[in-house]
Image (cartoon, rainbow, N blue to C red; front, side, top):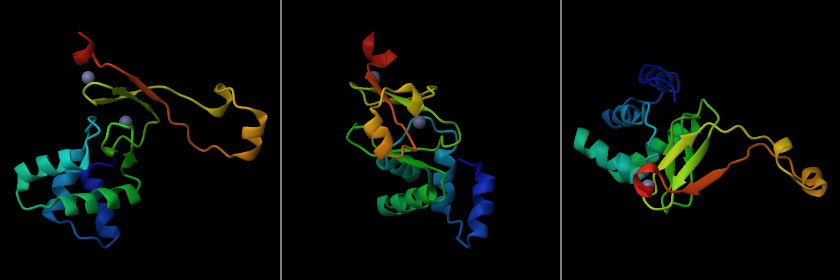
Length: 141
Ligand SMILES: [Zn+2]
Ligand SMILES: [Zn+2]
């Protein structure tokens, strides 16, 4: 995700208004590595500015995703999560007990996986997602 200043500039270029709600969500997501759900973001925003609805939060998250500033991910934790770390290719570690999601530096490409020729010839892969499931450090001790 770009810096708050760059986002503000980009919104101006796209003729979109910088509302207090948008600004608040930009700041919450800035360098946020917790892969929050929309509810998590909503709860934080409500503490900070009060005047915001969950619907507005979803709208802002969707527009940030459209602008390639955010990735919407479903890692099977029961909630859709939002990932502002779109610049560096990474995979995810998911704790099956507390649903914490952490980034892991893991490079994968289609040459590294043993795909049948049939699958390779009939499908064009453009992204491989690997989810590593287990227990996080807080849960296995
Ligand atoms: Zn855990
Ligand atoms: Zn991530």
